Image 1: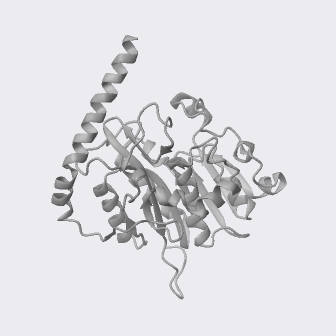
Image 2: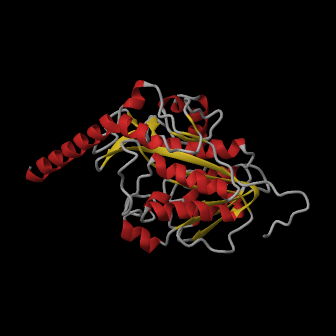
Image 3: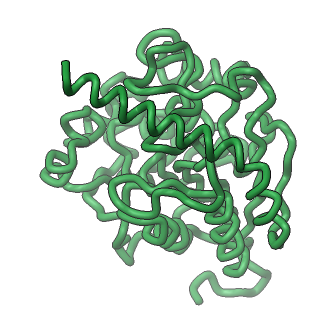
Length: 323
């Protein structure tokens, strides 16, 4: 009883801190955005025309959202909530890649920190060749991912829902162990790369950003990278910068976008947080007790999911693919 009471007091303090930061954020945001140089869109984001954007209620109401849930053999009213940011991340990645024409025979994709997500099986179902990677099983056990059933021990685990024909899956998919902080040099020439809710677990904001930039090296000219991660809605000043989970502020995303463009890649940002009443609410511990999980209280911050779509430049006429 004492432990339960202590947790309630702790969560109440965290909630009070988060609400205080939200209350002053209009003032701090006005001050910090005066020096922004990267152009950011501020319109309701959609799955019909996705850019780098936040999850919102309206996207989860889209027929596209239901279509991808059906393809993944996921009932959004069952295992996941209909309005669940994790499910949105998978839908967002698949939709972004489909619109870029990445799901067909001859296309090659590289996935990072794939866990037991269904994305690999969906991509193979449509003919794409996939190299799916994740941390060693021993490390997943140590860090708790295996216990939470968020780690694939072997190739077959990635098609456990039988989304893809078994023989086709074996033919098109390779599984290998990889540390996202040290991407193997031979992993190059891919049409697309992706990661879902992984880069914020690399130890720091800097490590996650470095991974995003390094993942671009794996793309061929004209390729596409799609990554999702945590976005701090509470404050553009303070955040969780290191540890088990890092929360990216607006300023961190803008700084990363500037680095991406300096390297010659393209990214379009839309940081609109949604207009529906649900977009103003956030889930509280122990989570998923309500009918929505799009935004949540983590430590003393309100966080949500952001997706990043990054396009590699096309190869100029007469140019060599290798630098």
